Image 1 (cartoon, rainbow, N blue to C red):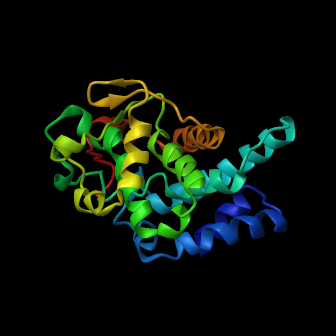
Image 2 (cartoon, rainbow, N blue to C red):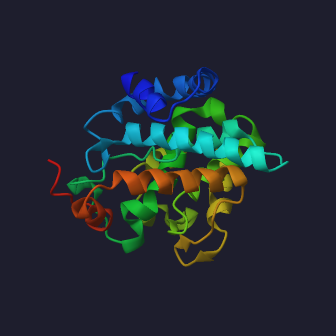
Length: 237
């Protein structure tokens, strides 16, 4: 894909870096659900597509992970951090200028809701990435808490409809073990319907940092910043 090569060039990645990332990225970004998010149907920050945002997050996550491993003699899985980055924003419907995105509860708005939608969609679309229980826990927790220090909407099994998730049907089809992983992650530092926790794992923490660095550069104007609260961006059609 041209956008991948363009971003690889932007960050001056070596041949080995490109090869490593491509092997992890290709099975994910070649999926039809991801390809949709590389189109103007899904504009994420300003006029940048969601797919482009995710790929840039992935590259920055990878580079930060290499720096971390160079400084620390620690157990750390770059491949899991990269997978968290590739999956972290796979929410269900476009959030800018979309009437379908309207919700009734403040903490069901896109910013608080979408990490849970993303983890549900990720398990649904890429089940092979979650076969190993230990890996699944790290990936799920990283996706769920990538917005930290912003809170995330918790899932209440008894009142699932009140979460206002746009992919409740996919959630209901998950196995109980995956539901338990999601709920246990969301129950850390819970206050009412939200969790204020950061990721439990270093892979998730580094990916969260990468997301902030990339997003800050991509939010180009006041209209884009305001849209984070309102869902309406007059700078895009």
